[in-house]
Image (cartoon, rainbow, N blue to C red; front, side):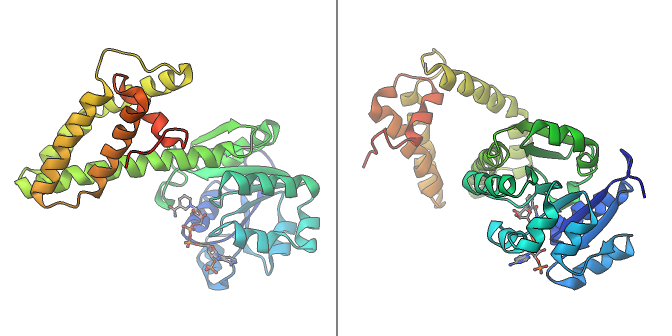
Length: 300
Ligand SMILES: NC(=O)c1ccc[n+]([C@@H]2O[C@H](COP(=O)([O-])OP(=O)(O)OC[C@H]3O[C@@H](n4cnc5c(N)ncnc54)[C@H](OP(=O)(O)O)[C@@H]3O)[C@@H](O)[C@H]2O)c1
C-alpha cells in the first residue's frame, strides 16, 4: 500500500498507559499501526481497534517507516533496541523516543542512532494519556529539523501542538524537566496554601478562585525572571529579596502556629536567605535564581 501524507506506517513499542494512547491516536488518524508490548495481552484492545500485532520488537521495526518507543525508562528501551537484529532493521528509519529520560540519556541515544544510520527524534509529552490526540495537546520534539518537518503531519496525530524545540537532542527533555519542576513547585505551593486555609476555616473554593485570578502575576514574574537572568542584572524597584524574606518569615510563623508541616515554607525561606547572604538582599525576586548554584554559599 502506498503511504500518503494522511496514511503512514507507524509502529508503537510499549503499550503502557501512554504508549496505548499514542497507538490509539495514530489509529484514530487512519495510519497503519503495528504494536508490540512485553506483556502481549495489552495488544488486544489495540488489535480490536485495527492495529497489527508484531511478534517481536524486530518485527515491529520491520513493519513501519516510523517507530515510536514509549516504555518505562531508557534502560528498558535500550534493552529492546540495542540488539544487532533490531538496530539493522532501524537503519534509515525514523525512531521517535517518547520514553522520559535525562539530557545525558538523550545524547547517548542520539550517538547510538547516528552510529546505526537511524534518524532520531527525542520527544517530551506534556500531557496525561487522556489528552493525547487533542488539538491543545503539547508534545516537544528535538533532533534534526528536517526529520521533524517531514513527519510533522504524522506526529500531529498525537497532539495538535507538536512543537519543534531545537536540534540539540537534549532540548526537549530539559524543557520537560524544567516545566515539570515549575508544575510541581507551583502545585505544592497551592496545596500548602490550601492547608493553611483548611486550618483557619477559609473556603477552599474561594482560595482557588482568587489564586487563579492572580495567575497573571506569576506569568509576569516568569517573564521578568527570564529577562533579568539573561541580562545578569537583578536591580529594580518592585520588591527586594529582604522584603520577600520577611513575608516568608510571616508565612513560616503562620504555618507553625497552624500545626501544618513547615518543611515547604522553610525550604522557600532557605533559598531567599541564601540569596540575601550572598549579597542580593536589595535585588528583585529573580535574584533567588543564583541560590540554585553551588557558587552561592549555603546559610547554615
Ligand atoms: N502516563 C503519563 O501521564 C505520561 C506523561 C508523559 C510522559 N510519560 C512517559 O511515558 C513513558 C511510559 O509511561 P506509561 O505511563 O505508559 O507507563 P506504564 O503504564 O507503567 O507502562 C510502562 C510500559 O513500559 C513497559 N516496560 C517496563 N519495563 C520494561 C522492560 N524491562 N522491557 C520492556 N518493556 C518494559 C511496560 O510493559 P509491560 O506492559 O509488559 O509491563 C509498559 O508497556 C514513561 O517514560 C513516562 O515517563 C507518561
